[in-house]
Amino acid sequence: MMFRQILALTGLPHAAFGLACLMGVLAPAQAGQGTAVVPQRTIYPGEELHANLVREVVVTNPNLRAGYAEVTDDVLGKITTRTLLPGRTIPVGALRDAWAVERGKTVRLVFTGGGLTITAAGTPLQNGVIGDFIPVRNIESGVVISGTVMDDGSVRVATK
Image (cartoon, rainbow, N blue to C red; front, side, top):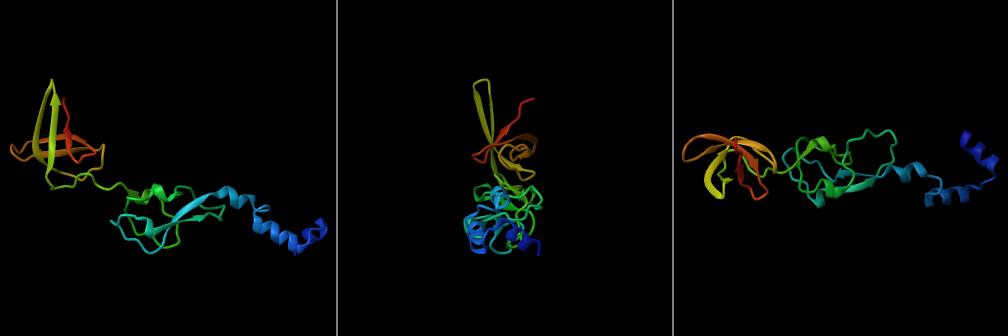
């Protein structure tokens, strides 16, 4: 009722008002909201996100809580840590990077110091992404050492 009274007072014909809404002239709140990434289907924990599983939508709810993925490129290649439902925003906290090293799988240990490089085989004692500082057991000696996960899947041994 109030809407019609406003239209009558402004003298704006219904057709022109409808056209203005379609063109986005009278919807600045929607234009300023941005986008959100939503799943196309139910995605279960441990699944890697690919382009065919998600899509970007325009955010129309001004009361939507922050902390969701806004751009598809931000979620591609990430692993889900909980179930994601179709059409719902994807919380950034529900995603993690793919493991660069996995617990129990053999990795290359690299120690560099004083112009000397020593390599050995090791077994990570926990999963890790690039940059994580994790414990690794040297396969030959059984000694547990710590190191940083590198982008090539090796672990650079820390010096004291």
